[in-house]
Amino acid sequence: MTNIRTIAKKSGYSASTVSRFINQSGYVSDKASKEIKRIIDEMDYVPNAIARDLSKGQTFTIGVVVPHMRHPFFLS
Image (tube, rainbow, N blue to C red):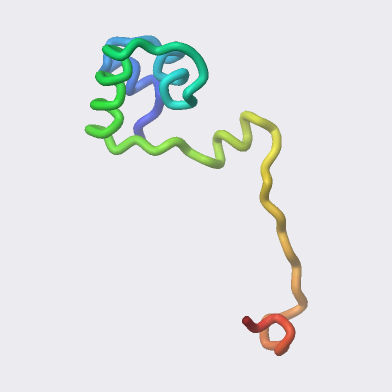
């Protein structure tokens, strides 16, 4: 499984630089951006939404409990 550290090692940049590029939070040079983007595309990296929510300590997900789905009220 690809992660930020793997991308950092392969691109030659630090994990914090890769993180800044992925999150668009801070300065990353054009040269570094192009190389990191190339590695991300090459490795088919996609940030894990669950991991992001865990690190933030909050989600914007709402759970709904219904008694059963066969009732006409719950059908779309």
